[in-house]
Image (cartoon, rainbow, N blue to C red; front, side, top):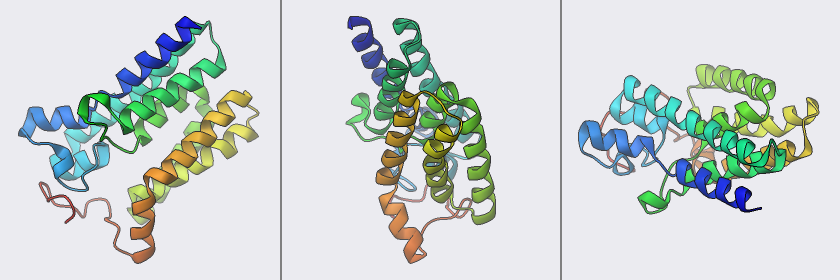
Length: 205
């Protein structure tokens, strides 16, 4: 029990390391949450800082999601429930980072990192579908939500552990909630398309 609590706390603290914020401070001496969409994630990093920093942030955000799950597995001798709890803790840390006034990103890259360990093939398939949607529509938010919603369906179809199915369901709900403003913009036709933003564009523009 103690190991489980430690694993969850460590995963949350790891998830709270917002690489988007840190990279923006290092490169431009800015708070990325005051620019572009105001979101501390890889997509806004692309919009504000460009491709190189965005790829770095994306990979690091994935890594911390995977690391959280692996920490849970290590400290619990492979308990699926603990792995799920630690993955969700890492995602929660990314979304509500204790180091940055609890204002973070939307957690999709960190979700990818966690789910790759939980259920590789379902995550791969959902990821390919999401990439195709983004390539066709240029709406990252739409692709991200489709990715999240497909996860529990695919995890169920692949007959994974029930703990992973519940984890995927929580991830899907969380992603929809975090993207609720994007949903409104998609309905109104005002959502930003990939590549349409300008570097340094102020938040809310």
